[in-house]
Length: 222
Image (cartoon, helix red, strand yellow):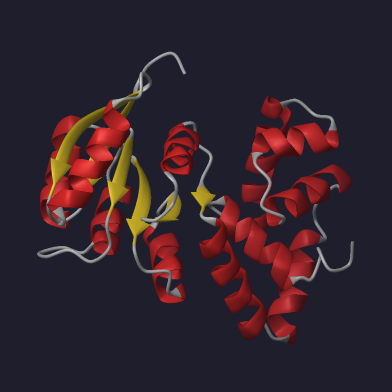
């Protein structure tokens, strides 16, 4: 990156804010531009400071993190939002995705992975913690009936062979760089294919692509 990623921390726990601030403050390519103790203050600061990425807690006073995320996603130039929480319950994962979050991490995620997530999300690559992904996929497998599976198969059927390969790789949790290496493509080419997948599958993020792939049982068929 040619410039620092501007980060806003929104969490009602001052110790968490302090720990995140110290961790991020030591990075040459990350700048903490502000902190807020609740969702309403976080929204106001995001409007004033225009951060690239917001680290958003879920359970906060005045305005919870999911509602605050939804408000920010409706802004003309919304920041990227990573929901950072101690709770790994599936309703929180799904709630964060429904609110438009670009990432979901647990607070016990190692610092190096949090930093990596911030950098990836800032560059336009949504992320989920491995445990959150497992939770989500397990729920999809439990709830998907024959009708949803058939619909997912129908949606995948419109893809070209290469687009399907990229979709399966996304469903397998690979990053753009990992997909590029495995399919012998450039990263910009992978990004172009992912953009086409959004259009053809009617999705807005990589997790929704993964859900479609898993509902169709496409990975199981490989």
